Length: 164
Image (tube, rainbow, N blue to C red; front, side, top):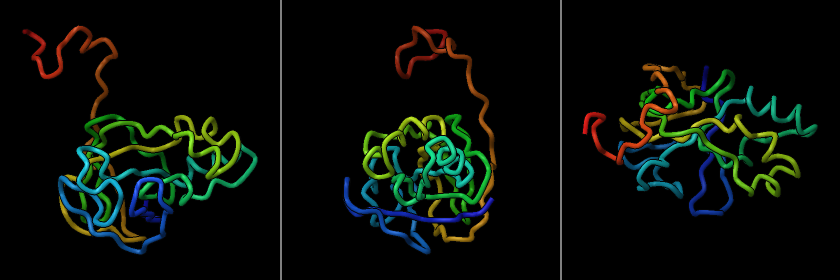
């Protein structure tokens, strides 16, 4: 898999701009992007294959820049299991959660887009190492996390150990 597209917006709700290369800082995100410095929403990653599947369901193209994701990979399925680590160019990311399409998709892409993108929105990641990501950079899963059973943490307080 390779980086096919990069998209940033200077402010929340602002227009997305295509970029050929972005600077990324560990613990902060993409320099100049609306989510820079937020706790976990540093970089969002999607794949062209997932967008093409959504387009087939929608019956209309799904342009990668309109989905408001930072990185578009050329093919494959983006892992969404929290803890999975990805490498994009020289930057390492960790999946925080699945990226759910927001209601903006209905106007940015078209009616029905939010539904078509459900389970195809990619992943929200935090940045673990600083560097640059450029269009054409190789991408790979470097550490696949194993999903915990849905009931594994039932009844635990946030931050509590299982035996407390």
